[in-house]
Image 1 (cartoon, rainbow, N blue to C red):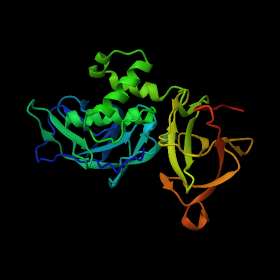
Image 2 (cartoon, one colour; image 1 turned 30 degrees about the horizontal axis):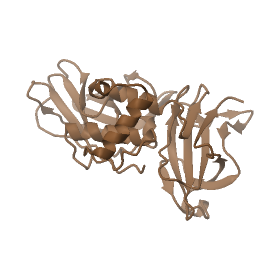
Image 3 (cartoon, rainbow, N blue to C red; image 1 turned 90 degrees about the vertical axis):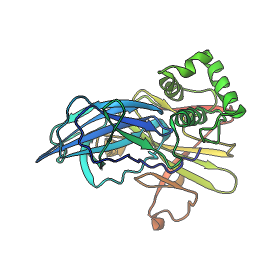
Length: 328
């Protein structure tokens, strides 16, 4: 699956935020949102608020007095490198897990800077204020929910493409196969916890396709490469939290799959043991770079702004392979 470019869009008005503030998700991704409150000389941030497709989440309750309200949103790690561009001009501090940061313009240990965008939400029919997260596809709620299900089905190894929010026999067949494989009834699809069920499914080992499992106490960033017989495409990074698994989005029938992963700390610096990086790779040099990347050119990586990184070939002869990243 190729992640399409996604945009964060907001509905604006000139009204002040004096009631509950809600963030509504009309994207095909489960997202985590963080807000920034800029009030006179102080700027505070808080997050992360998980919001499933076609749902809303109250992020501030009651009257809010602030000069500016800012927002950052990220997709869950199951989607690989975040498809949500961060183009805000305010760089504020966040943490990897749930956080409240009172002085968010000067980061401390374990905190990193993230781009926040100023928003001016609209007042909804219920009197509360709302801002929408949206893709270029401009899904309505029903389309966003279906596209979100399609996207997770593809990551889980079921053929529900294209991811377009349009129902049909292909999507229904993939969904039925997913439910059957996990002993679930069709009623669960309409439950509020269905996206959690799907996310949990793509974070557990699978008998088909490639699965990465992080058995370390550290966050692991991984990259995958596929050889289709004509070219080798490398892509990353995928965040794998401690004690979880992840299926990278590998579609089709590649002739060969390659894998590389490394453990990083809270500041995204490579962890070293006895001065050696804690990573899992091999002897096949392929192109990577520190930020999100995808390239099908593997020659002269440094000249093109990439690093030559040693990937390991993955034996997929049995149809499925689970790679476990563990401490030495």
